[in-house]
Length: 485
Ligand SMILES: Nc1ncnc2c1ncn2[C@@H]1O[C@H](COP(=O)(O)OP(=O)(O)O)[C@@H](O)[C@H]1O
Ligand SMILES: [Mg+2]
Image (cartoon, rainbow, N blue to C red; front, top):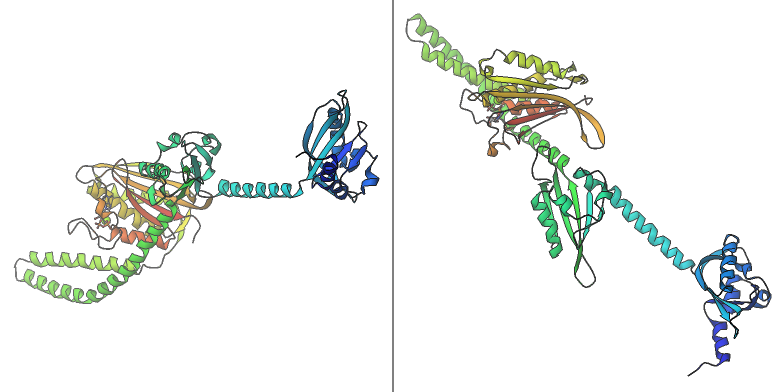
């Protein structure tokens, strides 16, 4: 069925889009209802006026140029700003087509426009949301990246690249995942890869690289991305640095344990102190009598020596459960260390130990109890020497400033004491700070050195931790805040 010219002009008149017809001199010869109501001027008053009337001032020269193009039989369309009679400006999508007569002359220009205010608003809303989402990802303190199904990076944030010490996230975009997977713990890589088989994963507290002394502990979440057909389109991975958290948790756990065992131990120590003193007095009297009578007092002396040792244990137990008041003074950590090691110089156990120093010269003085801090150094140096007593070895002592959070924050002095002995037995690592935990034969160890040291560190707002150095030997790290007290 063909449409009659009458119907056609009715359709045009009622069309939702604005319709204008102009002669080649840009004068309006026709407008439909929609056009006159959008522009806000009655149709009769628009006829004969310049088409530019409804065009916003700044769009005018553009429209002028484009209109002249149509006169050269070139169609155009695009977005311009129109203006209502009240002065309101609104965006419109406009197309202008030259209509030619039988001689191929441009007879008139048909302009169809529609208001795109709503669409523009929506576009702006979408743009804002996308911007928000990407700025959250960009600045989030957790590492985030996404891979497409070819395992190519499509989004990477700074936190992720800084975890892996890569300078810029931009440099990874469109690169293959292989570029970083070699640097990551294979267990994590496997979980990310399995995302492509549509497997979600949550892995907590694993080493990021799986090696190295400065390795970070991270948690990984893998989320496969599906398209509407249920096919895996890519993978999003979230990596959270848990190193700091783990360290704090561990120290807190140890402090709790110490507090409770310390309480118990102190109770027992207190109770046996008097009977032990009684026994000592009796044995002492016996020893003296035997000596007077010319007998062999040696067994009695052995008992007395052992009672002395028990006394010593009791004293230290009470000390650690209820440490004497801290008497802080401005102290130079390096000097305190040197004094302790000077003392050991002449100790037989240090004859086969070489001490290596790596000391930061510009450490600030800190407000600590020098005697107590030296007690820690003494305990650590003694343990190290005992660990190397059969083989000899090197004691490496280093000090430097550090701040624990990446963002700067509080300043700490960090002291590392490392030996080249056999290292701490794997199953002991979790227990060495427990009071009375020792792997040494009686007479050599009481198992109190490290728990006392831990308590002192804690009382100074500091931390003491241990690990086996990847290149062998045990390493103890003491951190003391510069201005906590
Ligand atoms: N430098 C070290 N190398 C190896 N093991 C160590 C070292 N320091 C401490 N340890 C382990 O920690 C345990 C507890 O140490 P500590 O509390 O000082 O008690 P003790 O020295 O009396 O045994 C030791 O028995 C030992 O097993
Ligand atoms: Mg010890």
